[in-house]
Each structure stands twice: as C-alpha cells, then as structure tokens.
Length: 203
Image (cartoon, rainbow, N blue to C red; front, side, top):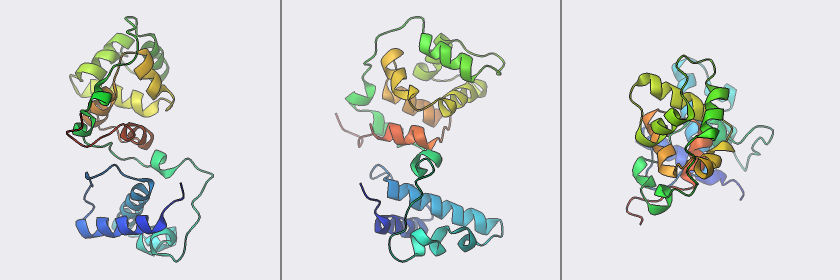
C-alpha cells in the first residue's frame, strides 16, 4: 500500500497540537509512526541545540514540511520496525483471539531454553526455559527478571515471535503484557503485536 504523506503530515500536526499525546483510538499506521519519529527527533535536536532542518527532520524536513511526495528509503528496515514505541494498551489484547493458546504444551520448554541460552548467555542467573515461561505467563517478580525478559524479547529475531505461540503455549496477551510490564519498546515487536490488537470490548 502506498505511503500516505498527507496522513503523516496531519498526524504530525495533531502531535504538535496535543504535545505528543499517544492516540489510543486506533492502531497506529505507518504514517502515524513516521510522524511520531519526526516529532520526537525535532524536539530532541532542539533540546540539544541543533537545527532539525539540517538533519531533514520535523516540520522543516522534506517528509513533513516539504512539497510533493518524498521517496522513503528502502535500503533500511522499515521505520516502524526500527523506531521504539509501545504496543497498544493491554486492554486491546483482551479479546478471545489474543487470549487463545494455539500451540501444543511443551513441558520441557525447548524453544525458550534455546533462546535463553543464546541471548542471555552472559547474564548472571540465566533462567531456564521453564523459568522464562513463568515470567512471560505469570509476570516478573523483580527488576532483575524484568531485565531478562526485556533483553530476550528485544533481542530475538522477529521470526521467533509466532514460534513462541506455536511451540511454547503462549498467547498474544502474554507477550503484550510482558512488553508493557518490562517496558520493551521494540518497534518490530510492537508492530507485530498490534496486528492482533482490537478495541476494548471486542469479544
């Protein structure tokens, strides 16, 4: 689907008018995410004493303030994957589809064992797959556990997200709750989770 430049510019204006208010009326689009990135970058550069226009971001950048339809870079991963932002609020993951456990129970938690061994190898008290499963399904008990969950979910390749559902008896809400609880702002995870988000009250 073509990128809607005018929609990104409208969202930038909304962010400017509301002081960056996070919208919870709908799932963010690519255009919303690009607008938020430009809005945040502009504020950050101004705060540090730099001119956002020289970096091509914000209201004086080509995407937001320019004329016509700029070409987005295709040599980098999509901005919606690179930019850190929260998934939709947890109540958007309360519907039956997000709560469904579709995978087969694996009492040995082999996938999580493998992921913990590969991505948390240098951490003291590295959890077993079973311990990580408990953190993901029942919640973490302290800041140390939150760091472990954050490190794992922010570091694994995105292809493992659906595998966790299929192979380790997790549901979408488990991962969404972990993302919020552990303050994981990985765009790729949020973008994937938001595909399953539905307005509160959806059966």
